[in-house]
Length: 186
Image (cartoon, rainbow, N blue to C red; front, side):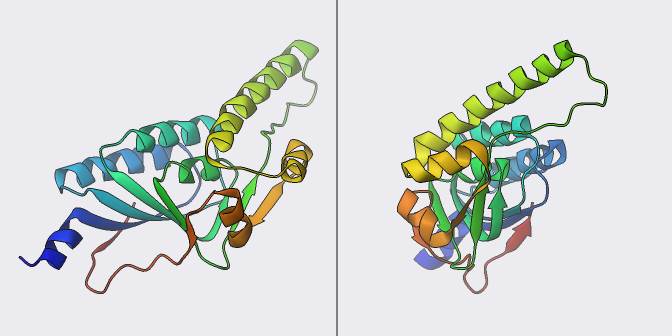
């Protein structure tokens, strides 16, 4: 086996798309189990997601951040909402020139006729989710005061160039598996 073949054997190329939910959590758990069985040391993962459930995104962030596999994350189109937190689990992060990121505060819809006590519980949950996700954002990303102000009350959209300046990505680069690499969908 040549050095190049040995290197490829220790790297894997994957795609992950869809909503961040319990199904995605299960798929990622299964995929990482397979990666460890296959001796993958670095997994290159292209993520395409508009977000989903906060708790599932936080679970994936914590799981991938502490996995024995090193993750290089790629955004080839859109990584938004809680999917940004999942994306930040990558030790290396890249985005295509035309990719975008979007972060925002948590939101929920109360049932019509909800009593004040129920609304208070919803608000407490949203504040807790925001505190958890914002701590991860601040650990990995340096937004300007103006960007944090937008994030406080609206959706904050970042281009790949904006993300590079903020430290969200290492480089503007495409997901480009080498010729002959096995590509797997998670």
